[in-house]
Image 1: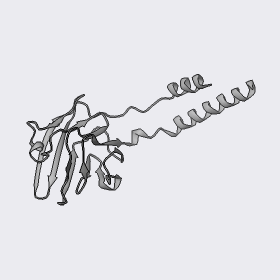
Image 2: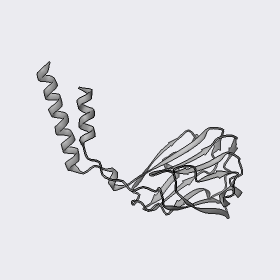
Image 3: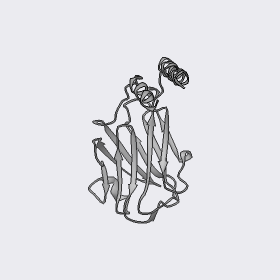
Image 4: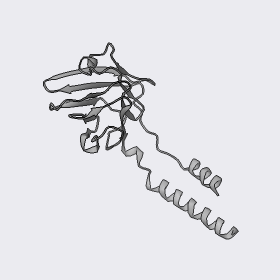
Length: 176
């Protein structure tokens, strides 16, 4: 039965999603009255690594911090040291030029204590992550997933999937 379900899922059409790979994204870090930004070409690897030559590294002073923008994700990672994002407002990241598909929602995966979706806001082409007062240690990360209308299957696709599952269940019950 598992094989039949996997085959069915492989046959269900999936909407083509826009990708950020090949796009230029503006990455900005705001710290009170100070801010720093870089325009980066999104590729398949890490776009910003601190310390490094990017402007943003002048404010992200804890070594080992990186930002990797994927096809539909933004990942911040601190690989080596402990630090704290001070309590100044604003204190966080802003990602502009996310124009592959209009953003209608976001997901968040993180191991940073007190970082939750209330600290992540978005517009149709930007995402902001508020980091004020958060502590980081080696291995701290967050990954924001970008959701668009293309991520929601069309009603016809959903019905096809449900009808296929019903047919498989009926076949299994008849064979038992």
